[in-house]
Image (tube, rainbow, N blue to C red; front, side):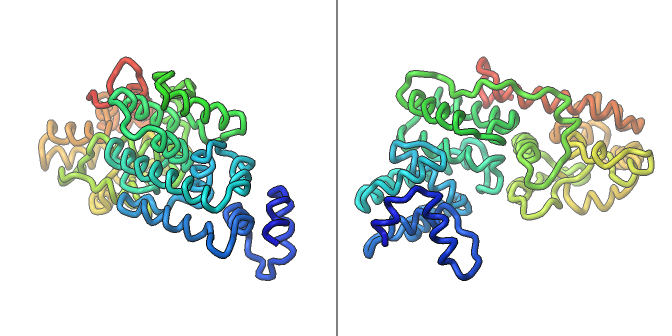
Length: 358
């Protein structure tokens, strides 16, 4: 039966297994490729599990099987799309073992780069899973990237995170990315495309903060990079906990939701990304539904205005936005904070600057 399956295209394999699957379990492409490559001494599922477990030290073992398959297909010198994954069936068990080992090494280096250079505490913090696909492909090709390559990869990560490049990763884009990775690894190009334009400040105003959404994750990573502190206690925020996205209790509204609702603002404007900071639940409870002018004055009375302004600055709330909050001017607050968030994001993708510049 295995030989027959190898002769079918992936859609035909899917139809066969839909007919014989009596449990009504949805079959993934990983299931289909596993079935099509299985032999007495080779089970793709075991190797995928081993590859996943190797990422556990950096907490990237939750990377999804389709992502791992894309990485393996790229390591086999195919590409990233469904047809490229299907080509894995052409390889012998021995060839697949070699390819999977190569892919696993690239994935481990990619996880280390994301954790060490960009501060991601786990795969859950990734705006897009396919960012990991591309990085793993690159790192299996380049054992020791140069410092300029690392900096270029950082710029690429921030650009693709905020510009939404992977939100609709088409086949044509996959081919372009694959070719660019190979050229970059060979030293033929210094920057990774896409050279897509970064969003303007209005994106931070109009985009709604949602748990798990790519732009919200990118915003959270931007905040975490500043090492935010709690507005009331001044203690560092546990950004690792916040970026795990197990819940949204670490993210709160600078202008409280209840207050803004009383002022007639709708949910979309209230939940604007530009209104979100990292804050402890205890401080959020203390703030409750107070007007910003009230809770900020309380904090100023407790710690002094310079301290509170510094705490807000660590959450990327600039002086003009702070001043607007002191008089409960939400519209100006959003405009001023969105402008700073946009500037910081663009600075991280500026080829004339190092990503380590303040």
